[in-house]
Image (cartoon, rainbow, N blue to C red; front, side):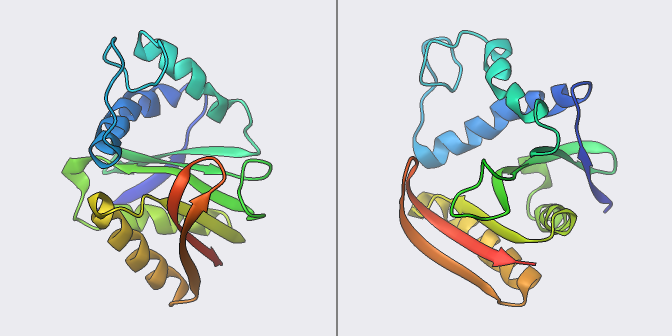
Length: 176
């Protein structure tokens, strides 16, 4: 299975924009989110996915700071990874995996780990990623613990703590 990552640009961002509502739908199961009265997973009065995408456009406005990757399997979109650098990283890390998503039809086949390794390899330095620490998110916790352990040969830190703006999180930190 050929898993590749591709940095997107303003001409190809629509593919990640197409996948983003599916990502939010998956997260709604973990976070118990409900869509707003217009059927969009936003807290405000966002009426359409086009409006939602405008807020998301920041990922293509800072090309040397924010890195929006499309993940493909055999040239078919399979997910995305959004990587931030300072000043958009917590705790002084050089890289922050802000969002990571694999479509359900590609899960359990090694796609996510292959993509994550490629993303990490593209950005050498100190990393941080966070995930929900609750029971409803055991699959992601297990995935990140296993993937980071393999990638770093066990040389990483893990803690569960309250974050400044995003509630309680399981946080992984490593350097590579």
